[in-house]
Image (tube, rainbow, N blue to C red):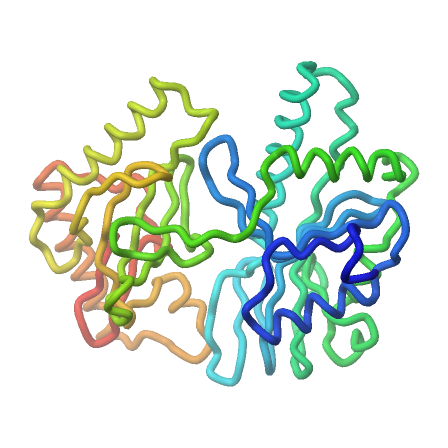
Length: 360
């Protein structure tokens, strides 16, 4: 596919040589014919005010594929929930899970935009195809050892499938749909291109809350909020965790007021607590994305579920006892002040080894 044609649109130039190489691999192997189109490094703002940052969106005969690029080296193991990468055995969430969530949101957003433009909720609902998520590992030296069922959605270079243990990304992007699914043709491809343009597909933007610049992608989220790591514009070693209650164009006045009340309630409830096991917000501020709470960020803290899943680290018996004791004391303190954590789980607990565990 030609880089200078309208089929491959570089919405935002990549700042990273390795990412440019991964994108070039896909671009060079995609057919330069209908219905193929691709957009790299784009951002869409949903009706709920959430930014969707996409490494690569490809339209082919079977529909859209949302591709996230990963430049990971060395051995990669794990399962459908978590992956363990590199010689150090770093355990992280399997990225296909967040990509799948992003793909569902994108498909719903495009369908809502089509219905809004045509002013007909029942008109050709098949025009917007399914959005398939995919993770493309494009380092020149990696090996994935994972059960086939757990490796769904993970891909590598086609010619290196035997060496990497992953199926090829180009085979996925050029696949034909099953007979029961409508094949994307030239006319539909053009309509979908125009739909993306009308929906406000744009360049990746720098988002700021106060004096802090948000990382491009959220690392956690709920029905009405997203958590970002952020860096101070002047003091680069000053990092914070920022929770944003998203407000968008589909948010009614009542819903917006409810989000503001929720953010204010969280701040009022937690800002005056004084316990080493509880995270308390430092600041409440308004932002273009919605109300925002600033929390401290501890680089040494690790999420408990990832720590427990790490093959290279096991809690000793004294460490387990200390963790249980700390959690019990923290919960007793919180409940004594009528603070409840309905989503308490290992995922919401951060641990500093050899120091006090910290529950969020």
